[in-house]
Length: 308
Image (cartoon, rainbow, N blue to C red; front, side):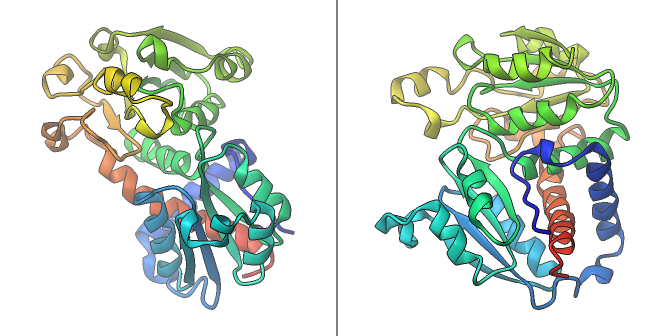
């Protein structure tokens, strides 16, 4: 049976734990997986710029022994001629075994999944969600903290357009004792629908503040995000807000010794490079863990589709 992953809620907590188990087994025994996807093809359809997500999907498939065919940018595909997402999905289904797709429009991956005859993985759709980044985040949290429960998570920066933030809140709200501290300028606050449909609906504790330094001592995890130029309708607003929060070693002085600093990357200047040498910096580990979780997810979906 073909199954797609468009939203992190498409995966149960049991399935996430199993993906983590497989990812950790890949980390420990990579040679056991070198031929796992032999003669299988991943199509990467990226209609929006990407470095980590696209390359990690491609690295994941190659390290599983599979092959990759790709579209990088809408101007290099028939989308530039006006082809619909539905027709693109049907076409690519004739060539590949599984699709990873990024698109600037919310809901694009869902449309692709409805029309493809092979599994579709949402690699980010506009400001909506980014489930495989969340899988990378979850493996990072698991390996850093050894639990998903009773954590205070600070989310800082662009909480309005940040699809990684929206997905992480949805994922972590399923675990007991989790509390969120939402740190942003007024203009980039978490959308009310996320607060209502996820946090309030599940009785999750959260506070909102503009004060990063004041929130710092309570945090177990600090998840920094960049202010995303591509989501703004005018340059003036972006320039006014882009440097709202810049994390420096000095700002970490009152943080917990076992704080984990995360970031979905790319960063612009919201984390000083001087923080990179701090043992609490976990964002480059996140990058690597993303590859392993994508490997685990590709294996899962291909097996369920009867293609392995």
